[in-house]
Image (cartoon, rainbow, N blue to C red):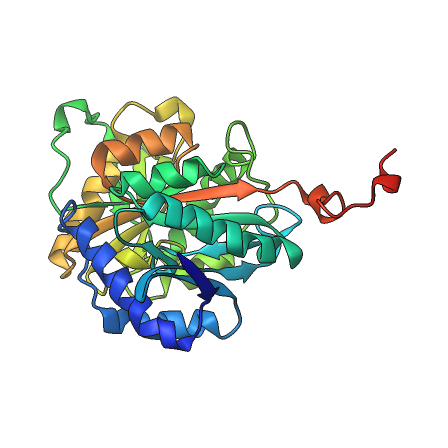
Length: 330
């Protein structure tokens, strides 16, 4: 195996492998939008402009690549690297070893440049790749899922008290306290996602003015007990699901005391019916897998298509490295 710096001459080869890997996932989840090599070439060329990567060859055959983008304050105070699903690939019968060697090669340069958090996205049904990265000390943090635009057949578990409608700008003061409650949910165990900011009411009014951006409210009586936000392809989700015909659930919350009454199902069904009536072909969601209540719901009603993994490097290795002078050990 020969490892070389990823360069512009490798872009068409990597794009072809990215398209092949995407098509392999589509065999498991046909709802995924189609992708061609030409779709990935500009993405790879753009990420190469400011980032470093590695390409692998077996003999004269291109066999794999790994390239990510630098992220400031990535999941903490340290910088990191994120490798999208189209930013990595390994072919042939020796994929595990190839991924491992590529990571060994490029991770040293990432750490030398102060990037201590490493993350990448893989296809959910590529068990070999996922297992390889688990063995490289990565753990899963996020996923993306898809479902067809057929309502959830769970009407017997939906309380008749629940009603759902689309919010208008006039409803923002009504639902805003619930969005703040939602924000305070994430710092708690086991998510431990810090509450660094909280959107104001004007942010939601501005968001609602965008094309096909909907805020769905669930009521029991006059009380708002839950909400979903839906929009065209959510920018925070994986590129693999992006399409003009993808409707994404970008935020969701149900008050704890009203869970297990069918509130989330009623909201999801409202999104699905609307999406089908407005020319969409699929519904998508991205979620944190360590969100106990959210991930349980999403994985019950959506088919996973991605697995995003993360590793935190002990930043002390920047000075406690292999070349450290023994006289400094005390």
